Length: 151
Image (cartoon, rainbow, N blue to C red; front, side, top):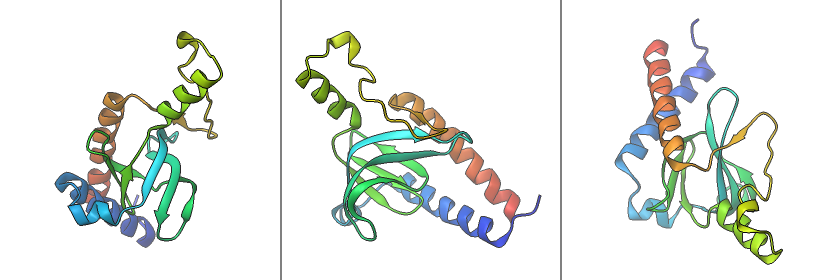
């Protein structure tokens, strides 16, 4: 099935974002990037990963809870994520907020996982970074294949 113009442009944007993620952010990329706090990775039914969290310093959205565009790369240890649209500085993950609230309410250790439910219709939370890396690898292959088919 041939791509329409919009699909081709979006695929090109994703391929450029993949290349940026492969290189990793420069210091200026991160200094100018919005900060995503209490973030959690999620996956759409079609396997498209994205992030949810409280953003600050976003050039268009300001400071509020958001969902990002499609996630193409992440390094939580280095504190960054790359989406189709931009770089993000990663701050505290949602799991840390979840644990803090649970402790404050006296919830037992075994009842803490997924204590705070974050439900987005049709989407699944994915807090396991290893599984997220595998998903991103498969997602990357799909993007590159779509780019090759759209040429």
